[in-house]
Length: 132
Length: 361
Image (cartoon, each protein chain N blue to C red):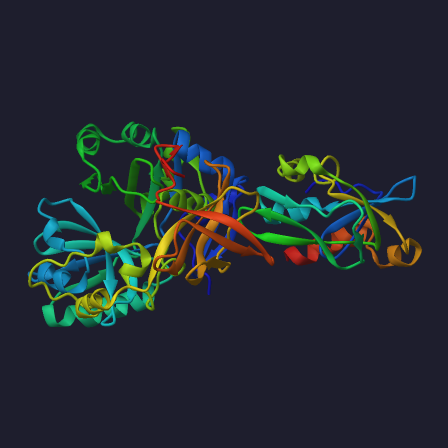
């Protein structure tokens, strides 16, 4: 099990969110999620400018095995997407919390919505309980 | 209850991710199914296929029994050791299962059927065998390891005693040799050369470990699925079942309408062919990014079809699939992927042979 970085927040559906110093939120899927999916072969990204709602699907990651929706942890406008994933989706397998980020949101309701997210310890407990 | 093969602990010790497959706890991959896929295409990989059902058929009337049971003709089997791929049909021409039958002696044939269909297959075999006085015995005491890839045969041969090594080296494709308690068949489900080795359970772990030491890479069901689909091989339950005839599943080549042989399902097949077969199985390639998957709708000028087996082909770097479509759908169709109509090409399969894309794919 890889260390979970302490500055991340998580959804129960295995997305991570990092609140950056400039107030934007970077989103990806957890290392646990990538290991469940296996080798990723395709990522369908949102478009810059899209408005996303917390809890709604806004990207898709596909492994050889399955397609999986990626849900937005917070509402807001998409201000950046990781277009490098189009050619190298396996980056998510290799570095889920770093180079494997998927998109960045400028949040519209962060203060309230971040309360709904799990801290790293609570997320670690969640995946522990799913495994047993 | 989940069943385990004798190699279960060995897979776990190798770090396999395990999944339920037809009631069996089997390895999906040992880290990366794409790496395992490439290992088989480029060197040698091995699969635990002990979950498959080995059934021995004995009795003086075994050949007449198989003439009646199978859509392909066991009369093609003239030399002991020779194998044949066939469907076993119901009276409506629907596929009960696909299997490999080995001719070992006039009173002794061996069939290998799928794991998920074990119970109904055994019941069907027992029922049909009665009239021929053929004894049907499942060989649960046997394990099976498939070793596949361009270097697979050499690596297996390096582990055999001199006499068996010589025989194994000589056998042609779709032929088996026996010795030292091993049943070695030059068959497989990957499109690569190699062997499927039937081994007593008591010796299976040792054989696996010797293959591992010889540089054969363990590969899971994930790679097995992408390899067989690239090779254009059907998967029972996904590409055909009891509601589908061989005509509709790309399996016409396995049906022998030889003179006067009254096999189960023949009348229905002949009737369907006379009436016109309305659906056919085709190969699809998608040049856009994304993955074709089982159940996706295929849109054609003559009506909708459905993706049967679909996956990402590691060798081609794009999605491939089998689909069942109305006959005469033409070469250019589209697949509905999450509400988007993505154009795909209808191609002849296999998609990959000898590690490379086939012409037109």
